[in-house]
Each structure stands twice: as C-alpha cells, then as structure tokens.
Length: 103
Picture 1 (cartoon, rainbow, N blue to C red):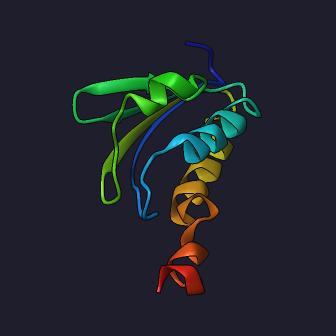
Picture 2 (picture 1 turned 180 degrees about the vertical axis):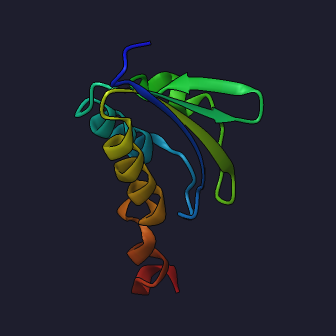
C-alpha cells in the first residue's frame, strides 16, 4: 500500500423509504466516479463495488438496512464524508415522506 493511501470502514443506515433502489444506486455510482478511491458496500453477506449499478441493486437493502462501506485510496477521507452525506440525506428522497401525495 502506498504511504498516501488510506483504508476507512464505516457503517451507514438506509433511511429513505424506498431503500437502495435504482435511483439511489445511480447516485452512489456517480459519487464513486468522482474519487480515485475504491468503495465497496456490504449488506449482510453480499458486497458490491460502488461503481456497479447492477451489483449495488443485488444487495437488496430496504429502508433500515445497515451498510458497511469500505473505502481504500488516496482520497478516502473525502470519499468517506461524501458517501456518508449521501446516506444521511436519504439520497435526496426525505422530502418525499412529507409531500402531499404520500399523506
């Protein structure tokens, strides 16, 4: 491992109502493409590269699921913060919970 490379592991919870569906997975892929670090997401016994939309969907992670994210690379710190923010913001879907069509 190069001196400047780091490995970070963190746990994130899926809080959006629809879980890890296609739109949320696409946001993860888009985010991962912005970093040199490799991100791997694990749910239960399944792992997927953050660069693979199809593999992310196979994680079958509904709302409330805990996802372990392993990040390895030179920009692991900033990638870690960015992916954490994506999960904390519910993939931008938290407003859907309070929209009139959901009441």
